[in-house]
Image (tube, rainbow, N blue to C red):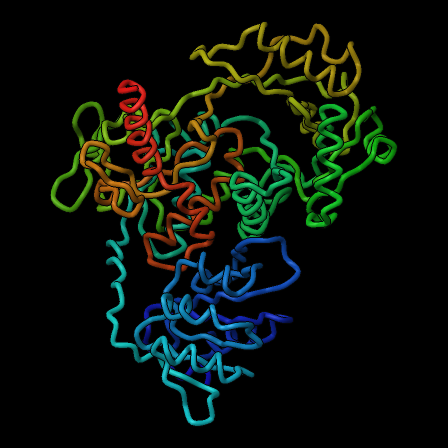
Length: 552
């Protein structure tokens, strides 16, 4: 059996391959899709692959109508975490029978299987779930009478995105790539004038011994961002910056010991993260690294404004920009949201709105109960000729970038006030950390007060908010994320904190995939960890706990 025999005229077709191997079958399928005049409008391939870091990996393709997800996980675990509706599946060299129930949960009502080397017990397990096999047991069709949960309707492909920083520009691009008409609304005269306006942001992954949820999410975002940036022109080309690597110095002997344990586990290939003992790190860096360091060879720095520009350019004619509109309000009228300027004029309207304006989004009543904070960050700009020449971005408690146009960036502070002006105390804090970083008490001394202040949008758990915004007042006694009532057509891409560069592409892709009912690019547990409605459930739990405490 071959999916090309079944996909004619479909709007979307999703294929699961349990053995990616050398990729030849997937490549052949994509080529067959290109040649077939009756091909589905969109082809989505999900394949299990070895040799990758754990988790889901979305691989951008040259044609936006084709999506490839590589899943590095055992079949049972992958199916349990997959959010997809599968139309065709290749089953090859699968183990056990537990996969059968999970597969039946995911397949479409008319799904087709092509099977290879299944034993009698596996065939029986699939038959018990509603698959009817051919006589030769090499193919099957799903014929269960249990009704399939219908997918939500795809909304009309028109959206307004509010905020033209990294979050908003990424949202616009990923929607435009799927054929949406997007209006990008920004209160400032141009894009990237808030936190995304810094001269340099650094990109690197996060490591932990237990591979916890923040680590897994950050890894997925980092790896997707690297691939995504290549698809829109590349770092150092369309995007100003350098994939020069990032060296993260160990904070102390304890941190070094924990890092050695992570390295000894053998789950971080050197291209992703390499632990260096002090002599190795110092030989590469040319500066002291007394407790060793991690080297992230694929990391580096980029100017966020240039990333925004590259993403907007990739939108093409489907993007309309409305810059310099000042503060706006949201009003629901029928099936559309109206975005109004301060004078009441309608700036834009669409059935779907994405709030991507950072902490300022809390000014909208619909988002006012989200627990978002604005953390002040002052970056110091230094004459690079007065500092050591760095081969990498250098970081520990602070960071220092290599020279770009004669300027090195050091920072950034974490302040709780809302002062937008540069101040000497913050500069001194940056310089003291810089001096410790390069082991030179004279570095940056008496530098002029130059730099930039931005405000990070931060949630209490330091994770982004991605998805439909919850209606706190209508939540009642809801206990599950999926049951939390949402504002129709209103979504958020918020809370990127200090990692907007890497969060923006994957979060936008997740939101766009969800709007289109496509397979999601993350494990279901990680998708839930980003759901804005998590704070509705936490507020209810906290309220119950407070009541119990008072009763005691």
